Image (cartoon, rainbow, N blue to C red; front, side, top):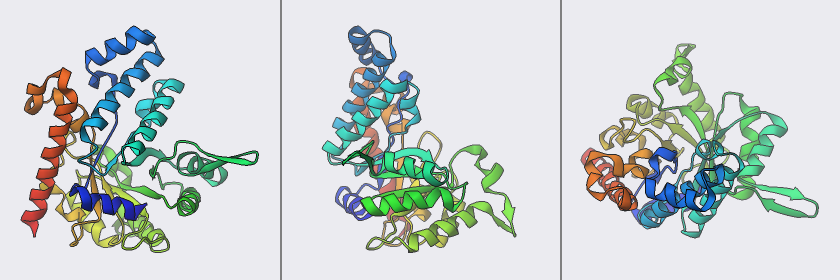
Length: 309
């Protein structure tokens, strides 16, 4: 799957992923009203509004991008109805030819971790049959329980030819409270990065490992150091746009081949119509605003990469 992601990045010339992380206040009123007219102001109505919102954004952007990243918490908040919308979104994105990065941040030990891996990447055995649960192509994984929490994911990913992105240095402001702590004179995130690289060397694709890393755009200096520590690791980079990251901050996340990183933007794209730069589109044309935001992001990153050569 890592090779498929690389091929799609090359084809689209867009090393970006759109984060499908919908909050209800991102969903325009006309979408909400239509959903509530059919299902009432219920969890089912909210989930339907999210689904219609997602579908329009995907329809407007799928030809420009290689991948999407639905954040499962935005769906879990609506209970079972929300989880149905999560699955519906994953399946629809696959129908449109997109790679799906499930942002689930799971991580436990033993059989629990294996069950998470099976549920999101693999197939569950039911009597004589096997079924995919959510069936994403990649998932995000929290490594802070150690190898016990990671190896079950690697096992299932290998069986299914899928992939992982392991949290190394996250984009949030307080990430340094733990991740920057010095251990034997080096920050914890470097130790985690070294372990991710070691796991990756055992599970290589053609040029990059299917064991990737998450490193926030908001920490470009750390990203530069981690790029050297993890040369064959594909890096998922959150924090572009709404969290402050810009193309010029991102060049060190890439290798000299122009690959090695995929940049995420969530509300900067899906809620673009709320920004001053895209206000002209209005709520009725929110999906077109998202399309323009994708084009602008591609241009920003490409310009930064060209300038760095």
